[in-house]
Image (cartoon, rainbow, N blue to C red; front, side, top):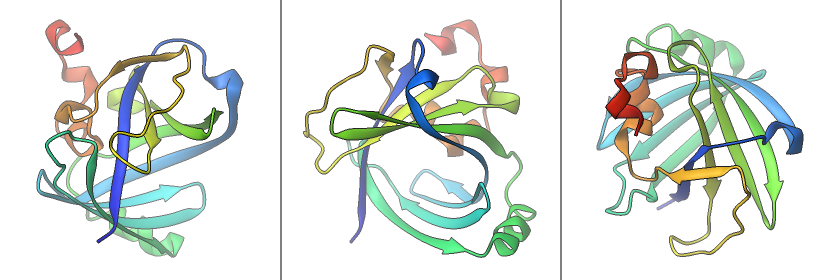
Amino acid sequence: MPREIERKYLVNGDFKSKAFKKVRITQGYLCSLPERTVRVRVAGNKGRLTIKGESDDSGASRFEWERELPLKEAQELLEICEPGIIEKNRFYVSYGRHTFEVDEFLGDNEGLVIAEIELESVDESFEKPVWLGKEVTGEMRYYNSSLIKNPVKKWTATDLD
């Protein structure tokens, strides 16, 4: 069974000057239950359909199945998604042996910047750049499927701690 292993961090500081690629992403959810999400994404001129299972206790690992879709089909599926669309710019930043995917959210989640790193194992060590902030792996409010229902613009000051 394919598994995604990733850790998420808030971002503090300049990462853009280190980015080697930037892609605009629009995504929606056909299903956003915690135990399973079905996501439709348009990234640049490509479409993707992704199904994810429930996270393990650490929040770092879960089932993931993904397939490329024709762009037109992905755009059509976005039309029937649950309310709320995620819009973001994704920056790819190499650091050490890994590539961080840094998402700068737009729209209702503007101001939120999250870095993700995919790993081979839950306990794999990796070099951390100075712009990497607090770890938010496993914190549901930072999942994209949660951000469509409770975007950052609705958060209170205590939510931002």
